[in-house]
Image (cartoon, rainbow, N blue to C red; front, side):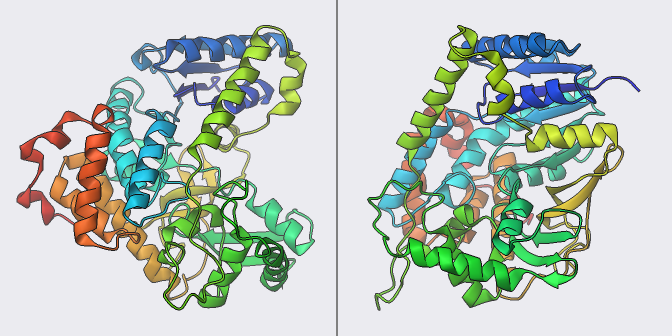
Length: 465
């Protein structure tokens, strides 16, 4: 069997690029193949290329390395193409989060649901589709793995508009889910542990947790309830806890008490529901509105990460520490499993195909899947989605489907429908005013057609969904 070629579009992504290098070098199934790094920022690309060269040389593996600012230079003969780029992510997320807050919409992440999710799709999906057109021409048999938020919206777009390509979508939010629940229930993370969850990406719910047939959910809830009591002793928004981890146990058990099922990615889920947007008039809510996404903290972390890369490159850090500082990543771990036929299972965003029997077969859900090189992900039977939560999931899915179609078509009226279907919308007039503000503030990051009169209405397209 030939050695795999893995192309990373957006190799300058520090949250993925360094782990991809680690996995490609350490995997005996991948390290005699080819790693192709692509990034439009030549300076960052050069740094990642030099880092990869150092790691390859240190381990003395035959991994071939390519690097280019032009993806077409390296796409030919690719077996896997991983999409991991972003258009000035932190800069635009700050705009999305701060302007939305002026209109009463609070986002603790701002890149998957709410106005932030819509605007990020408007920025990223045209670039994804342009890349997929090149993939269709140069390596049509490659597996395309989307790793760009909003993962569900972009994954839907790939399935709907590029059905001839082999595509799936990944997220690292559930990467350590099994381990986390095993620790909470005080059981080993081994073959006797069964964890099944389902829902749209970042809005998944724990439908089954057993160890050797014993239900673990009561023990998990008990553990989280104890942690929540500690969290609620200090609910001040002025503390330095990161927005996506703030009060997560408290939110999880409160939603469990309401719906009878635990959210699995609470740091995002609390942004998807209306309950943590503003306090009720009775002032009996124990949990305050979500903290806004901390763009300064994200910028600081990014700068620290680049400084660490520089330390490796100029010799201030010994390259041997790279082995312990990093580890596997969901995307390259999935690539290894598919290529080598390792029969591993992953949480993958793909069509439902009956896994959740009371939701549509083409509902785009994050599900526990077996994977292979020929067929990609096959969802495991998960069981029905409880009522209440199911309706919330359907609203999120409708928002995602509308957003994907509207951005693909360049249809502003359909995009308006998506924003008003979104669970965070609370006023038609405010939504319209906010969208106008967001467009003006991000003109340099969006396609020109959104500012043309012709995009304002498109009655022929509105009825498609």
